[in-house]
Image (cartoon, rainbow, N blue to C red; front, side, top):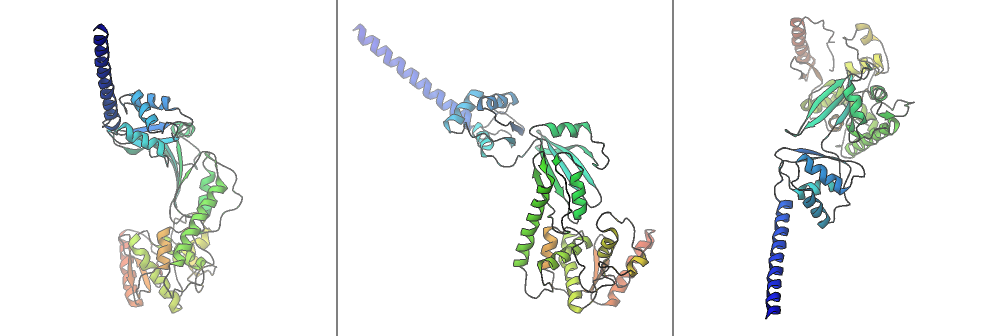
Length: 394
């Protein structure tokens, strides 16, 4: 009888323990899969070679998870404890532990944390330091400087030393190859010498993620490879009958379109003007090509063209030569290339600035002269001296 009672009590205890264990497991699963404790976005940084234990403790300290132990147990159960990927990852508010495990083991580009960005622009360059505000989930500018000045802020210098800092190069459309090469020389998070400036037009304006110490020559090669793919694809998809014999000629036209207008909606119309002029046997008469002949793509003119420069015959003076100049005059972006190879169907032969940031297009010289007169009136009202040629293509 005594043994029967002992067995009965043991069985009861075992059942209670099993029920408690089942309840604990169910609670743990709910904690692992349910909404997390953080009411704001979190930037989770995974250091190279970090262990799951260290990461779980870090997440608990940040308030991203309620229990380091449950986080580790869940990651082990999913067989992802060895799949941590180095980087900085944005975790949404109230993300579950399961969501966080998936984010930090999937890999891919970092989505938050410190960014040091070289902005390569037509009129100058800037190095920008950005960091994510966890409360808003948005990147905020922390510091900025002109690398040509050499006065690097301490915040940017310190950021470059952080193991999780991400470096980016952003190249604007219309920048010349010389400007890009010079800009890459101005930042010390890249390495290696640039002996030769790449061919004009051969580099794709885009954003490039780089590791600290990445080679400048290798980066230029990546830019060239991207541009080659963009041009090849656009060339293959071009309509029949365009006045280009080679992809290089289309690239030259794209660079002119890029420099003539900053309005996306105008690119195809501007391209149509120059295509129509080529088909009519007219000279292109576009200022940006003349400017390139003066500056060789190594500076910004910052003034109007002189009459002597417009009258001087050079390989890039499209007021004096027939057809296209010998090379591109800048690095055109994808959309300018697309416009050059897919011009609008118009019979426009002229255009001139209209005072709104865009252009007035014309079919005849009389229409164009009227548009030029209106533009000269606008310039006069603004107190600007005009050098706009009467038959200016742009």
